[in-house]
Structure formats: C-alpha cells, structure tokens
Amino acid sequence: MEEALAALADPACGGQALFLGVVRNEFQGRESVGLEYDAHVLLAEREFRRIGDEIRLEFGVRHVVMVHRTGRLALGEASVLVGVAAPHRHAALDACEAAIDRLKGRAPIFKRELWADGDSAWHGEPGGPPVAP
Image (cartoon, rainbow, N blue to C red; front, side, top):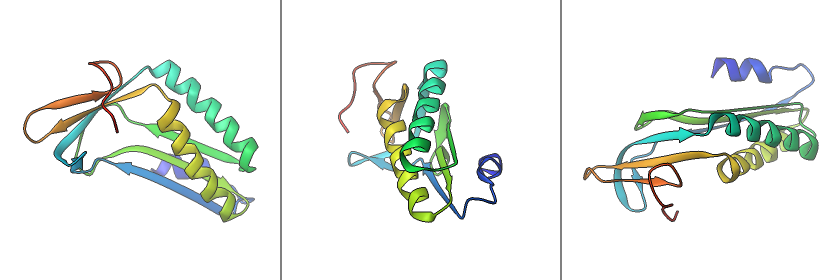
C-alpha cells in the first residue's frame, strides 16, 4: 500500500483514487474460506502496462498503479490494488473504475474459489473450465 501511494504522489494531482479488492466470505451463494490466484505473469504485466497507458490517455490522469497478488489468500486479505492520480477527483475516480474493470476483464489472472465444504473451482485456467460469474 505504501509503495502504491508513493507512486501516486504528485504535487500536480489533487485527486487520488484507490480500489482495494479483498477476499470475501461467499461467492455464488456458497460460503468461501479463501481464494487461490495463478497468473501468466509476463503476459499479465504486459497487459497491466497496456491498460495503464490507455487509462492515462483516455482520462488524462498522470499516474496509474496496478498490483495483483498470486497464491493462496485468506478471508479479508487484499488481492488487488488499483490506484490513480489525476489533477481532479472526477478523472481519478472514473479512471480507477475503468482500470479495475479492464484488469479483471483482460489480464490473464485465474482464481480458484475455496468453498467451506472442501470443494473448489477455477475461474478460467489452469485447473479446468471457467465457472460462470
């Protein structure tokens, strides 16, 4: 979090927007005990850069930070952080929402839901077919 905030620091930016995604205790009506993430890291980093470039151009923001964790995460742990800094708050807020939506839709990051009953399911690769959201 501190590194992300430091990357957004800019005296020309009066607006900073942050999105922090955390592991919740249910998904699709089932009790969840955690998540596991896997990723094609090089492809994900490349896509993060593309998204950041798009967001800067489209919304006129100065800085974009995107971080996504991999591995097993417990309830309440942060899985993804998106931060944006812009001269004005409206651009920062709109850009932050667009950035997380694009990251979730395009980055090759795969999630396995760990349900309380011991069952699990991957969303996308690597362990099987996608599960409908």
